[in-house]
Length: 238
Image (cartoon, rainbow, N blue to C red):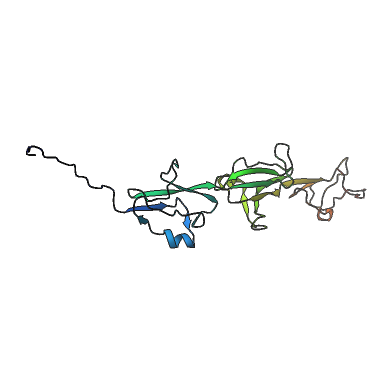
């Protein structure tokens, strides 16, 4: 700069802020509703500092979650303003999982001495089931849990195998009813032979064993009648 006596120089400035800034909305798993699709499917562009109308719960939704507003970061430490920023930015939707009640109907069984329904309240949506009971029922084997959802469907009508319950995720207020299969028990009928005139069935065997479901009914007519010389068969005793 040439020195000139009595000359004044002034700094020159240019505005580095863009004339317009663009905001992109990251839905973080949510989807636009019909109204949101019309207004926010494309990023919004406006003059920095000018008013920006943020999408509301009427514009965006996510199954099993409640909308919690927009944030400038994915850690949700700062709420997004309702004005355009001075640079192109992405803002993030915050979601809070809804909570549901899970009920286990032991259906005749017991778990740790308890025979009443076991209820888990405040369970977050989409989380794996925790603390699934392992009930027992004398004479029966647990094969799975029947799914029903009183709020939406009286009975889903399908059974989840007991071994698969740990991978089941919470998707509403659900009742799981234990399903039991009767164990197989053996019943032996003995001809009760004694002395020289032994008793036996027609095939010469002294006893016969039958396998049946626990607690089922077995007609004695299905059992061959033993014979014994000099005696009349009177029935069966335990």
